[in-house]
Structures are given as C-alpha cells and as structure tokens.
Image 1 (spheres, rainbow, N blue to C red):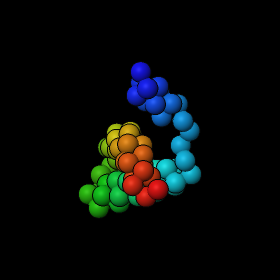
Image 2 (image 1 turned 60 degrees about the vertical axis):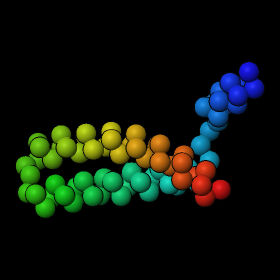
Image 3 (image 1 turned 60 degrees about the horizontal axis):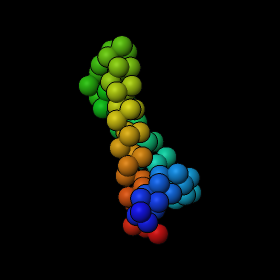
Length: 75
C-alpha cells in the first residue's frame, strides 16, 4: 500500500528545474541534429518536414524519459 502511494505521488509531482533544463537541452540538440542531417542529405522541403515531425515526437518522448533519469542521478 505504501509503495502504491509513493508511485502515485511521484507521477503527480511537477518537474524540477533541473529536469526542465535537461529536457530543453535534449530537445534542442535533437532537433538541430535532425535539421542538420536533413540539410546534409539535401532532402526536399516536404520530406524534411515529415522527418522533422517524426523526429520531434521521438525526441520529446525520449527527452522526457531521459531528463527524469539524469535529474535523479545528478541530484
């Protein structure tokens, strides 16, 4: 019962400033890498847009997960 309450409290808590900074950095670097790779491959605008939308979703989901892990290790 105690563990269940702890899990629920952890899910409800707001992100710490450290988590927010890490998340922002991951998203920024991920999107810059995606744009750079698309430019190097000389893709047309439609293809680049589709790739960047997919990459954005993947980077945000991965960044959310990684920022929580890294923030716990750095605290």
